[in-house]
Length: 311
Image 1 (spheres, rainbow, N blue to C red):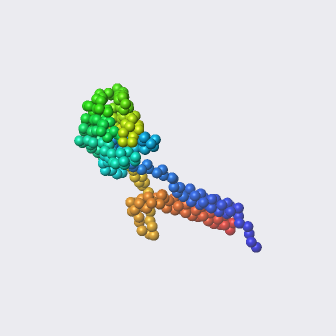
Image 2 (cartoon, rainbow, N blue to C red):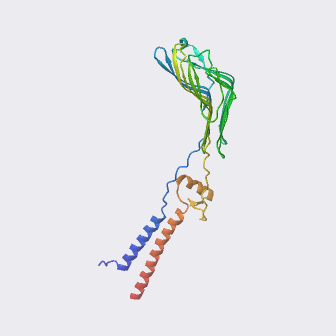
Image 3 (cartoon, one colour):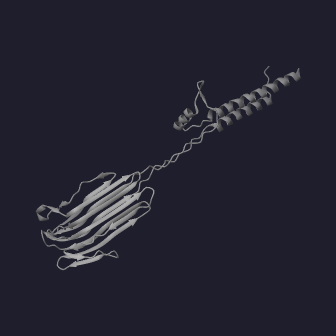
């Protein structure tokens, strides 16, 4: 005749199973999402001897845009060759126009882990406009602009304004307090602003001269030239270094074993770095096994004592 399992035995089995499941559940590792470190960014620098953004109106009412950057250099992406001429469709039968003549025109940029810098130097320069081949729109004796963006310092911007400037043949004094307005009867107007500089915590920009032009050449099939001219334009942005990484602290747990072979601590850490696991998992899982075995032994001992008392 079969006998029912005693209630204490059932209770002990239930408790043992519950403790075993709890132990294994608690010790399973949970991998935390690691925020991506911001990527390092190299410094940047740009230098342009002259930039022209002009709208040329022909006598035929056709508008021809002229957007030219003369002697542009950029780091670290690229370096462009110097361009001092441009072709404007419909002007002077399509012949190339020499927009800038200078005794010295130099643009330099650099960018590395220590910072970024850009500079432009221009000496004895004559800038011409389409439709005015024999007249110098802007005559500049000497000027320079320079910016620096060190990785561990504040960006700086420096401008040396030209000592002498001529606009359409008229001498103009470089004013630092505001723009200078030059009007030439029968030709047009030019507004000039000197020494423009801006800096932020990470960038710097400067230009030696900015001019707003509105002239009516009525020559070489050109009715009107209007737009903006910037001389010696420089800018930079400081580099962003890679964030420093720190190693996780090493715990005092005993080295784990794999297939009966001891694994050195450094090898274990290297494996965990690639898997995201935890070095305490083998020890805690073993603790769960010991816990289940201990409960079973306790139940067996009590069972034998009860049997001895009945007999």
